[in-house]
Image: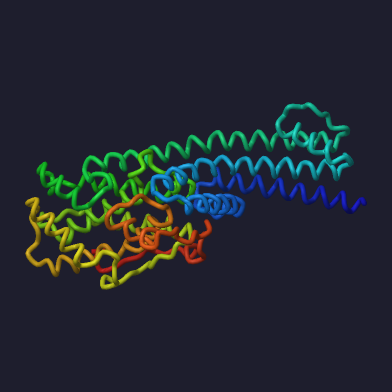
Length: 380
């Protein structure tokens, strides 16, 4: 019996330490690390939400359901931490001589919440009670700092997404953005726009891997999404560089590189495969007829186009290939609202079923840090 009690104490202490370490890595460590407990909670909750979303007939209903996924799971996670710590404390108190499971649970709950409605009987249990109370306070302190950080990052992300509607419409369209800039006489002065989005991509790479719940926080309006906004902006840059007859501008090139590196690393974190070094001639999900239709729309609006559209198509595809697959995969993974050249060609919309959901894991290839990826265009 002594061995069983000692084992209960050991198991309880291991659970407390593992839970505390998981919380520390999830909340405090500023790096996109895979935390098994966090992975299990988010993956399990995603399956529950997917079951409900798959039964709903319209996108608006599914969007309302999935809009709750990120925030609810973010609240479930600390609840899991609390349950694990109180349960582990129950094991420890029982192993230290409180032989009634009910009393051990009451003592653990009293200690964790610092309510003090049950007094431990001796010094060892008093020490455990103090340690559990300190653990509870630490978890509360981390949670208090974690939630404001999450929402501050969300607000930063959504500011540019909302502003893009002024230029690119809702849903965002690269063609519409270029036409609007041409109409107001700013087509050759887009450097500031792409510089802002270059910084935006760098920001979401850091926040959406160190705080992965953010990827699932949906925009306040159903038609908006950070991933479709990213796609429209990147396509605008690709069209400006390949098809629109304007003076050379360096910022669209830098923005595309910042964008595809950011999206690939976010996809890598979630276990979504991406090609680190695509060839300019690899196929893309936008076909030539769609490109030609976009060119006709641009020409009808008076936007100056390059003379050789065959060469323009090759250049556009050479730019788009850097982010094409990862953009479409993320749009399906996040169940993004319908938008041209991004979510409208994801598996979700083609098959009207949800993508298989990768676990929140970090592939081994990401641990072998790449010095960078390049194609003919991305390094030009």
